[in-house]
Image 1: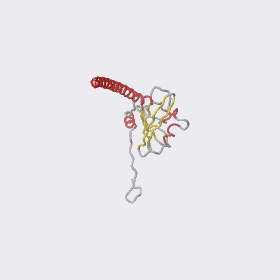
Image 2: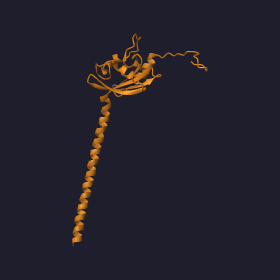
Image 3: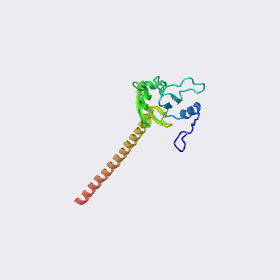
Image 4: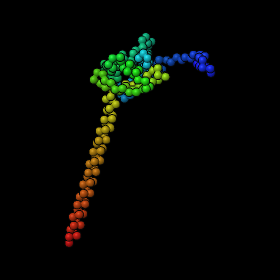
Length: 178
């Protein structure tokens, strides 16, 4: 705590239960299997994740690189990066947040992060790209089908109009020629 003259006059602290952080982060989900992680930026330690069991005393805090990627895979976050681990790539980003596409074990993942608590931590979400793309591709297919139907109707109306014009021209030419 800084006093009116700019000198430190005291220190304040707060305790946050791991289970509280865990329950907050566990509610964040991206698509079917995407997960959120609260990661200490300087060390890469995961403070909260659905993969951490808080029902008993935690003796070691895992590194993000040791946790499994979302979905049915044996790959870990360490498999996403070539040398240095994924946190090394995220820590080098000074923008306060961002996104990164990476692959491991034949699957592609989209990582999105945002700095929290004055940049000391990252709130990171990791989602399989196919889970992101599937609904988009489904919507694109529906749009294509609707556009094709609309084009077919427009073509039919144009053909009918052309037929009417041809008939009118023939009738008029017959009337004028008499």
